[in-house]
Image 1 (cartoon, each protein chain N blue to C red):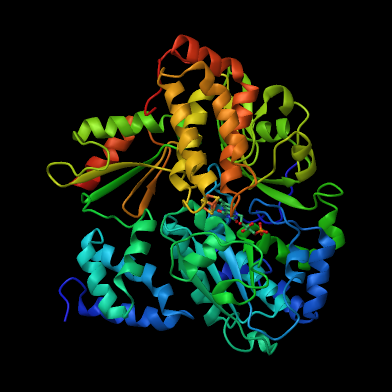
Image 2 (cartoon, chains in turn brown, blue; image 1 turned 180 degrees about the horizontal axis):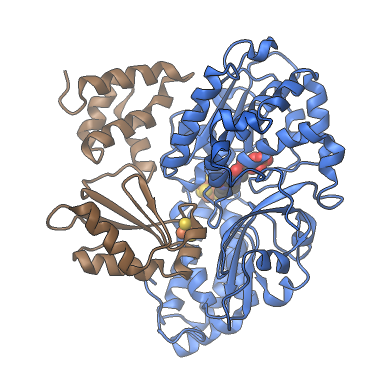
Length: 158
Length: 427
Ligand SMILES: Cc1cc2nc3c(=O)[nH]c(=O)nc-3n(C[C@H](O)[C@H](O)[C@H](O)COP(=O)(O)O)c2cc1C
Ligand code: SF4
Ligand code: FES
């Protein structure tokens, strides 16, 4: 029936809907599933999810908008999130963000022209002992310097 | 001296899996707990003096005692949202000793007679999540979870729920809203979760470290556990130490440990640097000046007496190379970003604080901004649904009051008294 939510994903969503005491608890895991497929969660996917789950789309949209990990617009192949909270700021996290943005010629939150990177600055990621650090997609990269960070990004980009 | 209860086997990689865990006595304490009556476990936890390690420091046994004395289904929620800036001790535990948390949760669930528990983990913790999922599967396969655990007749299911990036979901009622599939907005208390929590059922929310500590209280007994720490702050505590120390790390020491010794345990300051300030309990905790640090003890009472708090045990060490105006700007940005917006004093107040501090740090500050920060912050305290508003106000007040000269200098000269770089990056 749907184009944005694939059959396997519908199966996953249906399972999640009975996994918890209330089917609403399946909204967050389902949004993750959609994001894993498309890289972000569009309003159209929310509409489709609403049909699959039989939950008003307004309730789902509210959840998507509340949580910062759900991307409300497309991101680059590498979603680079640099921590700039206190311990990372004290250890060069902000300068690192600037360095990466400059290197790839992007503004924070935007996708680079070749579609490979998006750079964002984020709050404490619970890895302050390895400051400065960044998260790229699912993975943490720690104890960075401007140079080592670019080296890591270059490897992942190719 | 470090005292390693929770962290004893952190360096042993095999402790992550159930075989290695069992080889070190894993799940033996659960066996012991099943020979006790649930009420005896609660009494032991009460007698141990254990206080919540998530930030508020509420006595754990007393919280459990608030559950209604009937057979209504109750839930245990483990708070693994760990969002307080500076805190990373829970992540370390979930990655190095996942079964220790699971065992602590089963013992606690047995004590409060809960058939179902959740670990609510923050969305960014992918590695911890993968390790925990594997550990939960192992525990089911070994008969430590599921029906009739170890032949005790006790049934328990444990599931993991992954959050999606919102500091406010670390607040216990925000967490409950989130688990219910809604925006993670805190709810008015009372009713407290122990009476009306997840899906309106009685619910106990405890931090990762708190639940793991329960295992050691039952293993060694309350008396032995209380030998660590001070009279009122009992047991050991995990501290996440970061900032300007040479070896930032998690350390476990008895409560009441000297702050200066803690800094030394983490390699001390960089050569040639002087201590300027310490945030002793996560970014919500009022900052201490170097003078206040000299005789500071890391326990609930001593830090409260100094006008600060132990919080989550996130100790951020600040040396004399830092500009306090700049750091407050970072902190204010965080709270404004994370306010859930339900309460006017918090939503508007965090916005104003960020705006005014940012104005100062970009050299646009006016002299009355400094007093205005204090005025706004004071109006944000104690008037909201949850404690985030206070958590934003307290650092603002303490930074400005204790380092007023730096704020005044910045306003007057349009640049930092400390750093030569002018306005810091990302002001
Ligand atoms: C804004 C805010 C954020 C919080 N974040 C966390 C957190 O990340 N982890 C945590 O364990 N407790 C956090 N707490 C405290 C919880 O509300 C709650 O007191 C705690 O989970 C209870 O467990 P404990 O008694 O074992 O500490 C937070 C509180 C507030 C007000
Ligand atoms: S105090 Fe702030 S974060 Fe807490 S409920 Fe009110 S608006 Fe939300
Ligand atoms: S401040 Fe950057 S990970 Fe905590």
